[in-house]
Amino acid sequence: MGRTLDKSNAHFRKALTRLPLGVASNFRYWGEDRTIYVKRGRGGRIWDLDDNAYVDYRLGYGPAILGYADPRVDAAARQGMEVGGVFALSTEREYAVAARIAKMVPAAELVRFSNSGTEAVMAALRLARAYTGRSSYVLLEGGYHGLFDAALWTLGVDGWNPGSNTDPPVVPYSRGVPEITRQLLHVAPMNDANRLEDIFRAHAGEIAAMLMEPIQGNCCGITADPAYVKAVRELCDRYGVVLIIDEVKSGFRVARGGVQELMGVRADLCTFAKAMANGYQIAAIGGREDIMRQYGHGVAHGGTYTAHSVALAAAEKTLQIIDETPALETIAAYGRRLQAGMSEILNARGIVHSFAGHPSMGGLFFAETPPTNYRDWKSSDYTFYDTMARHLHDEGVLCEPDSREPWFICEAHDESCLADTLRGFEIAVDRTIA
Ligand code: PLP
Image 1 (tube, rainbow, N blue to C red):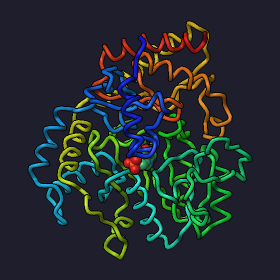
Image 2 (cartoon, helix red, strand yellow):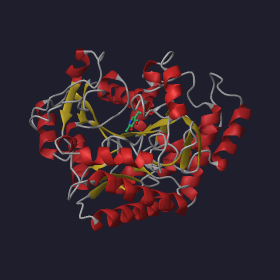
Image 3 (cartoon, helix red, strand yellow):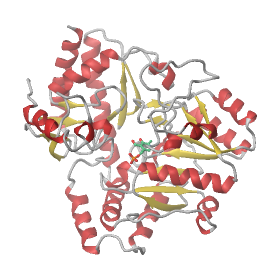
Image 4 (cartoon, helix red, strand yellow):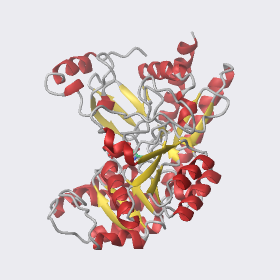
């Protein structure tokens, strides 16, 4: 196709003078010549400053589940604007959204709102600690749960050596994360219930929470075996550990009841964000009544912008659409067709591959079976993917450039998106092989 990024490149140089790395979030920096600035998004596509169009499978890291600028949600958001914003008081709509979440996700008996996934997970961890009177917690390797210090320990930085299963090297993902925050943390590899039990047994009575994302949405959709998830549930019950399932990415996407419905598990606490408002800024913590009622017993929670009237109205409409229409079936069907189309192209070239996650957020691996945990993925050769992704961008298809994220599907991805994607994918694969 041959795309130019002249305007994005020029803007990058200007932006650098006022914004570190020229961007508002580190993850949006793709290098001097490849950082893209978006002009607008509609449906399943975005356009950059140079008017290059892309079929977008990043969807803002998942939120735009119905598609960008969905007219139904935007109309609701405009109504929310009429309400007036934030009042340091509650509005009636909070109940309606909480009730919808509770209907869709039975584990969310009671609900509170937050502004971001990070905030929701922080709140859940605090609740678990307050409820148990314990302090430490377990994270799974490769799990991303937001940008707060307690969670920034399980993603390998460049050059990370997976080391041994029983004594994983635990490195901070960022400079500035105090070493002391590590002292309360235990890290386990996914899909190894024996290892988890060892940790629970060795620290019985100390662990407040197990925080997990059964489909790792920041690790190409690497997926927990449902038997493992069941074992985690049982171990948490046996050792009195609060099971927090982070559904910030999987929630209202992989099923109406999220990954919990998909895998037949019930969390003690769960967190939501992304898909719940089609990109408007809202998150939620849901959970068992006895744990959630800790908010009436001295556990802090709040926030100036919590349950903002615009985001709340957008959430009400988005969740209604997801709950009452076949949007998720449409999304999954597209995801299956996309994967089938990719497989056809790869098989024709004898390229071994597999998919992980769920068709609505699927990871592509160039291996016969997908890795079952982060350490296996980190030790594999994923350079083919990374090279292919760059060629794909040149062909007007946006996936994550470094194979970290699965491919997110929205309801607005249509036949023309599929055709453009597969045409671009074929070219990108051939360029990668060449
Ligand atoms: N938890 C999970 C599973 C996520 O994927 C993310 C973000 O990608 C977060 C938490 C943090 O959410 P936010 O970026 O809204 O703070």
